[in-house]
Image (cartoon, helix red, strand yellow):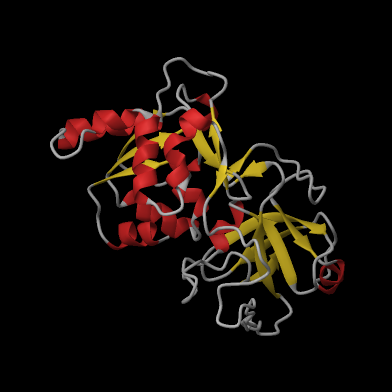
Length: 297
């Protein structure tokens, strides 16, 4: 979000956009497109085409395809959800001419900065990268030899082996957060954006959502009582709008959601999410956005 704000505030000459999809993963789609358009020259390093290659590319852009982690010819490491660092020896090769992201970056560094203070060519070898990580980041010392030992390990300090927290009283401290109330108007709701089972981050692989048994994505999930109060029926079309943007002709789906609340899919609903951030967490409000409902023509 800070990167997008910086781009929006001033004209940037060039940028490397590595992995991910900045356009679709940031809120306020109009703001995000404007911010990316202020970077006249962009170089994308991606494994898969995404919306970021189509929106916010007003001037010049180069897309460099790179090998995914399980297509690397050298061994790589990955972290599990339980903070285990594991070695991956790679896997299938989809395309013989796709290079490693690491390999491309080193060549660019050599061409731009030359090998004066840092021998970038050495960091094309993953073992050398792991040695640098081990020497630099506390808790990752064991990654230095994982290419030889093949032994997984946990990052030190990540796992609590005893039921105590690093707080003065050794207990977890909870705080209640006041959610801004709605104005109480009949057509005003609180919207949350959600992901489906068939997507990874902002990339959607299939329309069907196994979690919620929905067949399509351009929909809004609504409490049946709210549907009745609005005088509409399931499968009718409505429009959601606020000061940030508008989503037109969303199909209404009855769902077990608390009255006064709506749910729509991410990243499609980003057009309604303001790019303002919480003062403490510095994150946008993807889960509580005031919107109004009107019937679609």
